[in-house]
Length: 162
Image 1 (cartoon, rainbow, N blue to C red):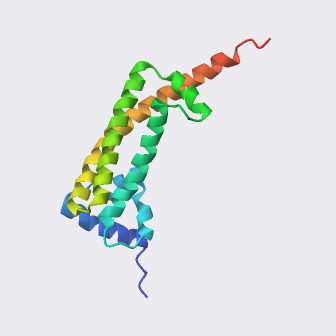
Image 2: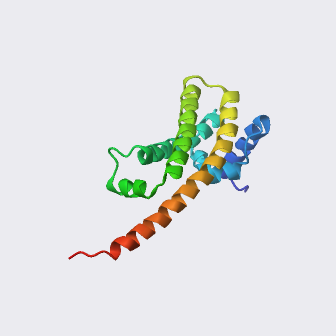
Image 3: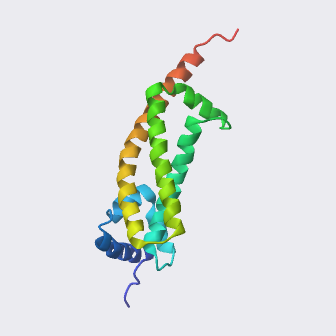
């Protein structure tokens, strides 16, 4: 009795086909950043569109996060503490990140309105490349936030409460 092929292996095979046609990023690289393995549970004739949707979820989340840091008007209290740790350079970098994520969001809306396998493939390639640059900047800013947050909390704990 032959072992039934796993859904994940089938997904990888199907992805390999569209990867070859459109010169898409490696499955494992895309999966590590965008969790496309969850698509193994979805039955579709448009795998490329589902990959785009997985990417869209992550981009939308980060767009909202960066937006809250830039404009914390109705944000949770901890966000105000984060914003206080940011210097002008980091705020400017967040604005640049926001602009790139907003462009991606606009592209996603366009792709959603009218399906085109080629445009979806181009989106995957281009936005994956953009993401690799953005995540370096995001990690850098998050590292500074954590460092400054720890310094701020240390200095607050030494204060006089009398």
